[in-house]
Length: 196
Image 1 (cartoon, rainbow, N blue to C red):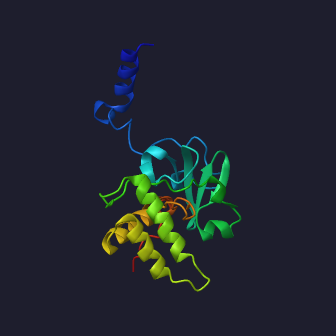
Image 2 (cartoon, rainbow, N blue to C red):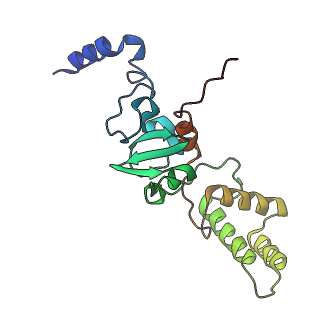
Image 3 (cartoon, rainbow, N blue to C red):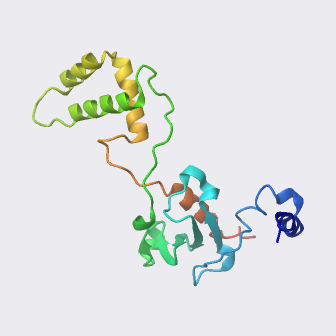
């Protein structure tokens, strides 16, 4: 089949207006690997394309489901608890499927040093904060500023960037599940208002 035939079939099945959007939105994408015991209308196929840099899973696709406020993500054929309600129902802990938070571009990098130099300054400054043996952390940071010719404001800006981008020696963090939880809770049916 040629690319023209594929494109014609795609336009015929999806409609020309949806071609650029990939044949519809995520609400109508078919659920290939459903969570058993959850009604189909309370499930949705999701992918890394849907969430961009906020995608938390190591796999590229998953099925999201909700039953009685228990949000479940089916990743690689296993059902995982996204929230406490799902944990209470006995679903597996989700931690093994969650990727580490990536280092994103900085919102306000200090322009006076290259990134590698800023990372070194940040590591030195964090080492000052880790002193627990009575040494003067403020004096240590003054030494870092002096060694690199930085003002108080410049060091604060570098420290803010280091925390924002999770530079070493900070421990890596898992990606947040908040966007998945929010999307999952939208799948839970809400009781209709009772009429009097």
